[in-house]
Length: 370
Image 1 (cartoon, rainbow, N blue to C red):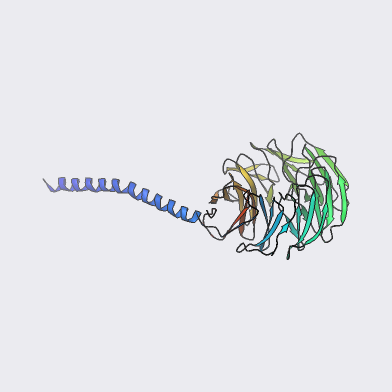
Image 2 (image 1 turned 90 degrees about the vertical axis):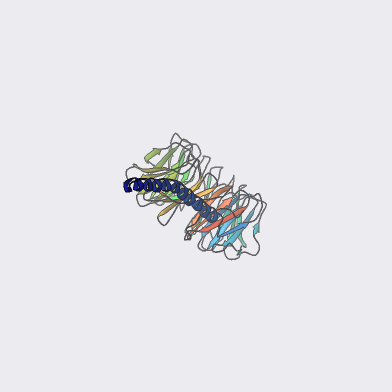
């Protein structure tokens, strides 16, 4: 056997070894990646459980997390570690199903059966309470020293946040379905059956009234001085709050249940089929549509340069707001139904009474502590 033949045999052996080793290396890297992901998925900065089998709806205010539970409790937690601030949580025989609103050192909570409570942020003591006609399933809106609340019965209430004195009540003669928004100096309120009403925020006087062929099921979003409200028919309406005219509308494939948000000339909203959309506010042109999953339960929430959505009831997705690319995904939030984002944290509420949080500065996966 000459030298050339031996060299060719050795070369073939090396090639066979490489072909055998490459799949082994790939499988090994994949297994290591899955192991690392699994270890990261077991990390939660903190979790808090109260009122078992209760819907937990969080809101973030500074370094605190306010959580309303559907069994009639409100808890105040430190966002850094989930420890309790109030020694005794508020307990009332009411259903709290919307997130609290916080301003001027006061927490406002609306009950499903029409009660409104104002609680001191520092001690959890009830400052005042009052009652509205009809179900209150949407979060209150606080602007300055005024609390605005829309009831299912069609009335819009305005209260002084300090003492609860009623400033006005306006009957819109329409079943209201979502949280109002203050847009361009006008209080814009959505009605269930395609009605949009613009009110003077100081007097409650009706400034305009519009009707479109839609069924509104989501809160109004203030987007660059305009009002955005989504419909059950999968169309987002962007309205001029001064005249009440529809500037443009955008159609998508799913129901629109979640409030739209904006930054600059960009409008962001999600639909029930799991899509996240970015629209140019000046032209109505679509910038991107990104499929995040089968459905989006909450979001988008804008924080820094990213958008956060609760997807498929068990994971939180972070999306680059400019390009629409997914940066990170936190998995394992089984039973998740609500989301709050702020102070560099994501806080998830579940329908089992559990609250879980992760600090956004930590680049790692998240799940429940089970």
